[in-house]
Image (cartoon, rainbow, N blue to C red; front, side, top):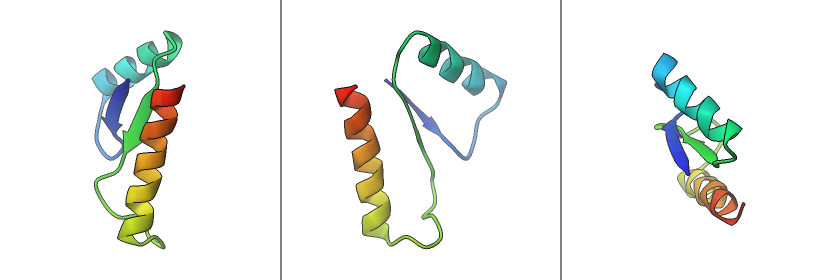
Length: 57
């Protein structure tokens, strides 16, 4: 699995994500800040669910 910061990155990060996806490696992107309209608990629950989905995949 590749875990990437959705708020940062560049050409290198994009290349790693593209390579991982092409190889069937799960990619999960996380943000550093609480999304507007979500509580902290909702945000963390979504992050945990994304991680779980990637691990099951």
